[in-house]
Image (cartoon, rainbow, N blue to C red):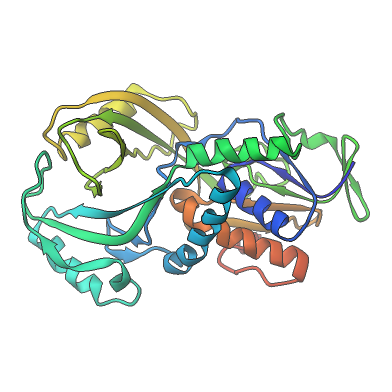
Length: 346
């Protein structure tokens, strides 16, 4: 069997690069062993504003302009629209938050999303003594369902192998690799935190950050917007809400914990006052990098090997942009963005 590319990992990064290959009529085979689940556990929200500091996310506006049409095309392939658009309301904790909000609105890009008024009315079931700031132009993509359906889409075309990729089986050729009889020009590793087991790229500074979320049923809450306080509360339908997330830099497992559950409960009860029932708890390790930029590029010795990783907490927005940049670098000689090129660490 001969293909142009082997892709290892089918989270958001692998999905985005696969789409570039399909768009450009390249042949490929994807390996996915389900050992990593950060993309499936992710909230899936797209929001180019960092609400903790009222600043613009890195290239967020530009990434969003590419990402939304990108996912629309995928929804047509999988025959399901998984994008829910809504507004967000940031809970203010002081008068200072209100002042900082108006200061931020004057900055380029942020004015596209931040409403120039403060919402003062009380909202049933929500603690908000100092009011709320409102964002427009954001939403959520159901990443768990997206990845599930996309895997089925590839399986039907026999482009997906659900098995572990064995690094020691790579035989390097002059113009490609031979992996268990599969001849490929290049391999792209999109393994998330699984990168730590990859002998070719594991020296890169990927610092996994574990995140836990809960799903709650709260019939009296009745909100149709994303609520952001010390945690987020996102409506996902039928009086059900996704709540998160924790940030644990020590625990590198994907197992839910009582510690994470209690942290979420404590913060939730400082955010809402209505009764709720916890229906689900999830955990995953986000692939984060110390400088908060992705890891993209070509291996220093084996030019057949490439990496697309480190998407962090905004993977739904970042993935299409960096996948396009890597594809154009490999196929058209386009320069990689220096901010994401792994050469910055070599």
